[in-house]
Length: 156
Image (cartoon, rainbow, N blue to C red; front, side, top):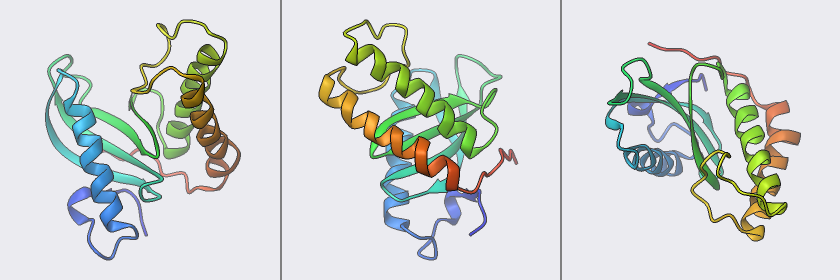
């Protein structure tokens, strides 16, 4: 399968099709939860592990900045995260950023420190949640990042 795949092209020929559509809808709801996301223009699937993990590139209408119309969204069996496209330029870089930001959040939670300056994960800052996220990020860091196809950012 060649990535990226336009979300409109996700058919029954795509592995985990039902899960990908579900993750896409959750990612769209996540973005619409921010007041600056007015409209989703399009989306592309960059990584597909079904409900475990997907990476989408969304093109949006952004009321806060006409310059930031593209966002990566990482979603699945983890707290979702959006990243702008200014630094991460490929799937590996997106996952590396997710891991780095998650590790910072985990450190703060496990140390009993404030998470005020951490990435605002939509997750309760509890020890239990920090440990669950730590397991997921360890998998990303130690296995996934080393073995996935690194798909570069492609804006059509």
